[in-house]
Length: 172
Image (cartoon, rainbow, N blue to C red; front, side, top):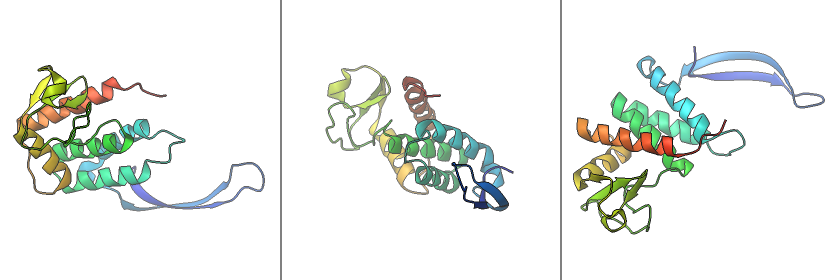
């Protein structure tokens, strides 16, 4: 069964870098069974966002699992992915224009254009308009339990995430 904590015992190598695996015990699941598939999707995305050789990844994935567990499955998965995107430096928060870095009050509208959240000045009326209500909902859902998203806000957030993931070069 994937997605479980493991207890691993192994022997250090005498020479080289390959040790000997002595014992593996499967412990508690990382997620409830109904969230395992969503968790595997997060794990796959984490392997792209935090490839081998990058120090980050473990704590970011644990935080993503926490968000997934604490929110409704579909919107929880989006919150988890967004959290990892932020921590990997592929996305920024909802309170700044990603171009000019001006602080934006969540009472103002913004635009989503070319995988960037932009203030109205930087967007020049290009992209998808994000109402202040949408921004408040997304920000609230990401940062607090119990904030529900409308179907439209979920659809917008998914579009935002998809454009970020497709705009970045993938490493293999």
